[in-house]
Structures are given as C-alpha cells and as structure tokens.
Amino acid sequence: MTAVSKTRSTPRLADDEPGDGGVAALQRVIVSIRLAIVASALALLLAGVDPVGRHPLAASVVVGVATGYALVLLRRVDWERQGSRSSLLVTAADSVLALAFVATTGGGQSPAAPILFLVIIAAATRIRLPATVLLSLTLGACYLAIVLLVDPTPDPLGQRLQSGLWLALYLLLTGVFSASIALYVERAHAARAAARAEAIAEHSAATEERDLRTRLLATYQAQHDGLRAILHDFRTPVSSLRALSGELADPATGIGPAEREDALRLVAAHSRQLSSMLDALAAVAASRDPNRSAAAPQPVVLRDLLLAAADAAGLRPPQLRLAVTPSDTVVRVDEQRLRRVLINLLDNAARHGRDEPVDLIATVSGGWMTVDIL
Image (cartoon, rainbow, N blue to C red):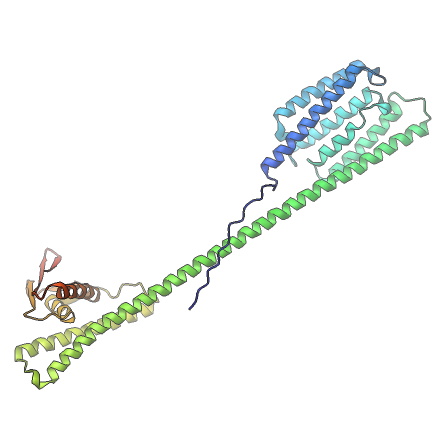
C-alpha cells in the first residue's frame, strides 16, 4: 500500500485586508478632515469678507460649537463606527452644523456650501445606502430652503430656485455614488472574509485527512508488528514440539524413562502454549484491536511454565539449573506474555553465557513472584 501525504500551508490574512485597525484608521482620517473643515471655517470667519461677515455673531457661535464638537470626536473616534447609534448622532450633528454655517455665512452665496458634499461622503462610511440617500435628499431640501429664505439675492426667484435645485441634485448624486462605493467595499470585504474562511476550512479538512492517514499508517504498522510477533511466538513452540517429537519417535536417541517423562511434560506445556495463543488471537479478532492484551491471567504451574520457556530457548539440564520455591507453586499470570519475556531472557543467557550453565531461580512469597536468571 502506498500512502501519499499532502501538505498545505496555513492561510494568512493579507496585509491589506481591512480589519479593526483599518476601520480605526479610516475613522481617524474622518476626524482629521472634520478638524480641517472647522479650521477653514474659522479662517473664513476671520477674513470677514462678504457674504461670510453678514452674521458674525451667529457664525462665531456655530464655529465655536463645531470646534468643541470636533475636539470631542478627536477623543472618541469609536463614535464613527458603522452601524452604531452614535454614528447616526454624529451624522445628524455634522449635517446640522454644516447647514447652520452655510446659513450664517451667506446662504446660497456661502463659500462653505461644498462642506455639505463632505458631510455626505463621510456619512456613507457610517450608515447604509438608503439612509445615505435620505440624508442627501434632506440636505438638498434644507439647502434649497436656505437659498430661498436666508439672505436672498436680488436674482429672480426662478434663478435662485434653479441654482438650489442643481446643488440639491448634485448632493443626491454624491450620496448615491458614495454609498454605492461604500457598499461595494463592504461586499468585497465580506467576499474576502468568506474566501479566507473557506481556505481555513479546507486547510482544516486537509489537516484532518493527513492526521487520519497518519493514524491509519500507525494502525497498519501496529498490525504488521503484531503479525510478526505472533509468527515469532508460534515458531518457538512449534520448533520445540518438532524437536521433542523427533526425540520421542526415534528409538536411536536412547532416552530414559525420566527424560521421556520430561519430554512428554514439555510437549504438553508447548501444546497449552499454542492453545493459549490461539485463544488470544480469537479474543483479538473479536475485539478488532491488535493492541489488546493477549489473555486474562490464568492459573499455571510455575515449574512447568519455566521448563517450557527454557526448552523453547534451547536450555535443558544440565545446561539449565532450575530452582522453584515452593516447588509445586501455582501462580495466576498472563502465561503467554510472561512466557515471551522468559524466552527472550533465557535465549540471551544461552547465547551470551560462554557455555556456562544458566541458573533459573523462581521464588513466590507474600503474593509476589521473583524470577532470577543468572
């Protein structure tokens, strides 16, 4: 089986993607422009040219209020945030102050009339398209009333009406245009956020797929290792049974009754081992868990278990010197797993003992079993 692993990098937010920092920066720009407008209004008022100087007291009050208002917003930039109640109040205050300054500095002839366009553009960043259009219509109607009623010029009514209507129309178009751009930017930002969310979801799915493949590979490896261990465990008793059956069946070996009895005992021990291993495999197959413990603890004669493990490791008397205390002890252990440990240790002792006898000493006392291999 061939496994292919795919790796995808984690999506990163683009540097130019608008976030809370970008919104705050835009709000600071709007506040700065408001301060610049107030400064320009103060400069017009100080210049005192006609028609700005027609109502100096009223214009001064308007500029004073506007200055304090601009300074407050300089400290409370968050009031400009889109969709909040404060944004509606800020828009209303901008509109009222702008109309008041236009009215007190010449009406239809006021050089401050373009401030109304800036009010609409700034409002488009805070309020929705319908509200921006309504604001444009309202400012246009108020400006038309100022043209007709405040400081009227000697021009004919029709001409003044036409002049007021043209600027009101431009205010409406400015509102529609500014709100449309703001809506377009908002939707583009939403689309970018959706694309980023989709990229994160795809990355998460790819990560989960990679983790799943890793777990599957680990499971397959565990099954492979388990199969190799099972084959190794089966090979040892089968080899011993083959050797013992050959000795028992061949008259030429000339083994005595005592050796024959020991060989038959070992055959029985190895047979029990094979039966225990088959039971463990059946339990594993039932649980479908290759890492499950081989078997539950079962009672077993300790001396027989040690002799079978030593035989599987190729150790027999006199090469093996066995001592069990008490000699007829029965212990409750996981026979298959303990046998595997003993075979490995005894096999190492036989191979690296320089042909010296191996002492296998087992002692059971106080519910504990101690096995020494020397």
